[in-house]
Length: 167
View 1: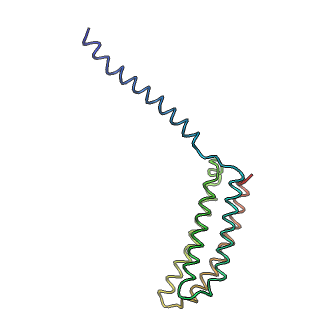
View 2: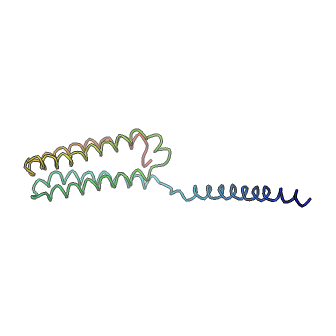
View 3: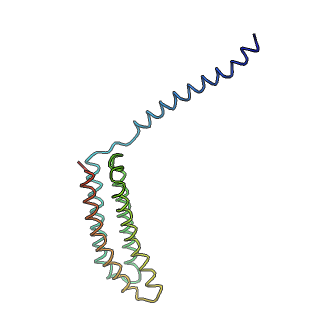
């Protein structure tokens, strides 16, 4: 009889451990849902406003950086553009799971748009490296960046309306 009870002891112990593990996983899973940050329409409106303000500041920089000399304008504009990216990332963090799912393609297009605008900075460095005047290359980059950000901001507003961001 001892051999029979010894053979059953490990499977019963394993079954107990397994049931505890499953129970613990369900508790942890439930807690994870409680810890998910809640987003509010106000948080979304504020985040969208911050993105659009940052776009305006960046566009303003494109109009004033041409007066900077020695590459300082490039650095300022690169910093302003990075701030646009950061604010846009913060906006996406306020979106609900449903908004993220329904707007997956549109948000990917907005991300791609920022990547395309970023290319203007690479083009500037290429132009300067190939011997073009840094002032001329900066003026070109500022014009392209200003216009592209305007188009990008309009697309952002359209996508946010469709996803009912801030409603």
